[in-house]
Amino acid sequence: MAHCVCPFWVGYILLSPLRKLLENPDSLLGPLVRQGMLVLEPGCGMGYFTLPLARMVGPEGKVVAVDIQPKMLSVLRRRALKAGLAQRIELRQAQPGRLDVQDLSGRVDFMAALHMVHEIPDRSSFLTEAWTALKSDGRLLVVEPRHHVAAHEFDQTVALAEQVGFKTEAAPIRGRGWQALFSKGSLDPNKGHTITHL
Image: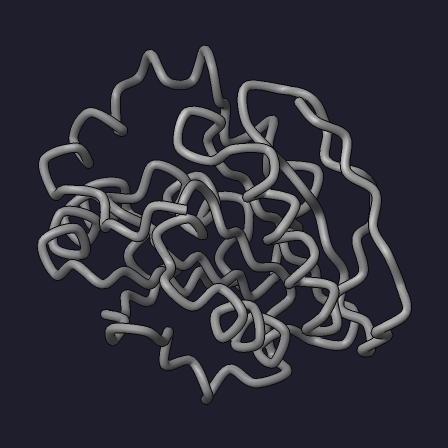
């Protein structure tokens, strides 16, 4: 996998309203997010998914949005204020190689890793941080773009998630990208996984 961070200027392109025709946040995340949840979104960028997530969790919920680029977080902060959602969003700058979310250990209801796992040099460490942050019944959604991630590379990510302790709820679904939903489980080194190529 390529381990390069999305350039800052691409963030503006990713906010295009036309993107909803191909990837609607409400359709993708709506069935998985409820009001009152604590949601962790690593690689949030300028908030294409963050603002819809903040609406989904409602006034009693919170979205912890993490990105390594301060410029991305600055734009997201302005967008959240303009949308009246800043109180529901906590912005954090990640450190190289780690999310730094130890204070969230066992507290996160749902984690949305959207189009960003391929940018992580150490996916095993990232997935371990995710597993640690989630509640015992927490879930992780991983979505990767087909034009950046080959099928065998996504297979490797799924296998790494299971080695960390995640349980794959279903084989990845067909669509414009690779998608897999995991639940927090316990490590079972003998468990295999099934992948359906998109």
